[in-house]
Amino acid sequence: MAAIISGYIDTYSLIEMKKNKDLVKKFVKPERIRLEILKAMKTQYPSTFFYYLKVIGLLDFIFPSLSKTINLPGGVHHGETVFAHSMIVGNVIRHSKKTADKLSLIRLSGFLHDVGKPDAYIINNKESFNSHEKIGSELVKQELKNLRFTNLEIEYISELINIHMRFMSNKVSPKAIRKFIILLNKYNIHYQDWLRLRVADRRGNLRKDNYTLSEIKSYINSIENILTEEKFVSKLSLLKMNGNDVINITGLKQGKEIGIILNKLLDIVIEDPSQNTKEILTQKIGEIYENI
Image (tube, rainbow, N blue to C red; front, top):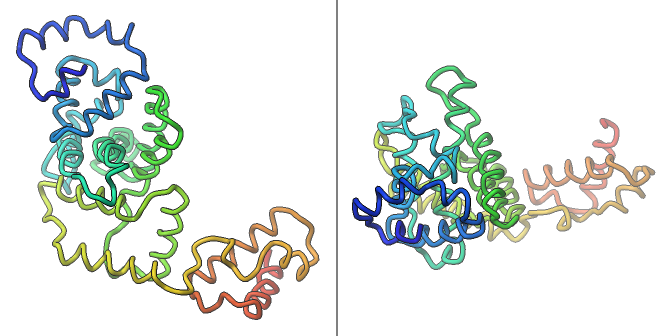
């Protein structure tokens, strides 16, 4: 498989590799395949790796979900097949200082981000791919597990796929951005990782214009403005109330109700960070407790 990464395979070698593809299935360990995949992600055009796997007949063995996208039309919003789109997306994700340590994982996410579309197409019974990101996320988890990717790598890639359809616009409300940042933090995904996949996804669409530089900068500014808010509360531990406070105020014992109340308080503070005071949250706890 290392020959694939070099970018060119002569016809004779290609024929021989195709003849002997079953040897890979029998004798090459999943751990070795994982290493070759990650190496391929560091080349200039990693799509070459996937195209050769397709020609040799190994793509459906290594990434069966990606293989199913080969002849699937992209739908009314695309001018290319799902497979061709995915190859463009993975290729256009480039190196940056911010994402250097995770570049291979981001690029692999780009190649796999739409693998849920074949199943979504069947479920919706039309050229619609509703929930394909959720379906694809689950498919990828199992395939990466089979290839012996680490749990952290699997979680990172699958969650990046799961959120790749989030709408990118500076018109999104501050509350929505705060909640999205919290979701990203939960899976150790920097917002720029997601943004790079989102921008690449648009560049891989032959029927739509790319995001303009001004659109990208505007959206980055809207996120940075939230991140630099002095009172931005991104997790439960930053609330001015904790579980013991809730118990003392309500008389409840330890249990799921405590978590429900704390998460509702977090929603309130996400909506309006100025609400994060002992006095206000004490009042809110009483209101929440009456309705659970």
